[in-house]
Image 1 (cartoon, rainbow, N blue to C red):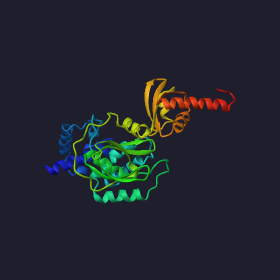
Image 2: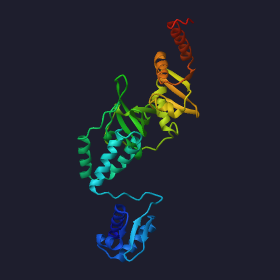
Image 3: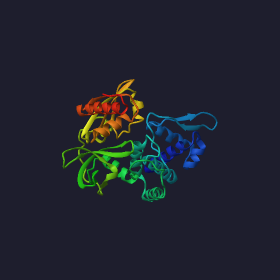
Image 4: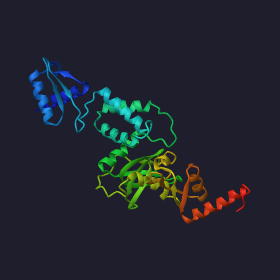
Length: 320
């Protein structure tokens, strides 16, 4: 039975390598008869793999597209190439697929044998990605956190706040979020009994991870929006609400995900929520995006815009 299962996996691997395989050639590669190949193909079909047969004097087989992805069977060189590619994407070289790359890399590194993990680490250490603005986070750190999220394992982390204060935190990690230029971890802080958002470049996890925990109901179904609110609005003294007179996707090209939360109103406008500890800073922040907008709240910000309007009018000799 074990020999048959191993042969089925090898057959599946061969079918993934080429579009068409003549039956005798498959039999030769597997060291079996053509009749055995036919029986193994039937077993694969029973397992749900769409193996198509071609008719003719020789006959052949082709692996078709299925409803679900069959297991990828990679040789050593292919596995290393995929892992290095995922590390590169996770570090932000390919914009928009960072989170997916981290999840895939976390799964792949679980099954890599030690000799291949060593090769991947060596290649990662010898490779430099093009510089991009923002804090640098290693793929190793991201995959460690992603693994704890996946396996529902508590993490004890050393965390450095924006003012340089370091604290020890015990957290139940939920999701990693890539917001603009930075990575964030959304997690439940056990000691503070509340959800928190941590900048990944400011944390250092203890190893190994802690015991498993029962996942809690997340603070929001849209974790990406929650993280944007937490880092771009919630933690600031002044939390502004604006109507931007431009489509949401257009505003998003100017407003990083960690600088505000964008919500569509209609095809011509959207709501922007952004925060700052300074009224001047918040006014300048929104004005420099280059869109027409209406300010709604807080009332201190509305009054501040009125004062700025009067001051600029006087500067242009327009009076009050």
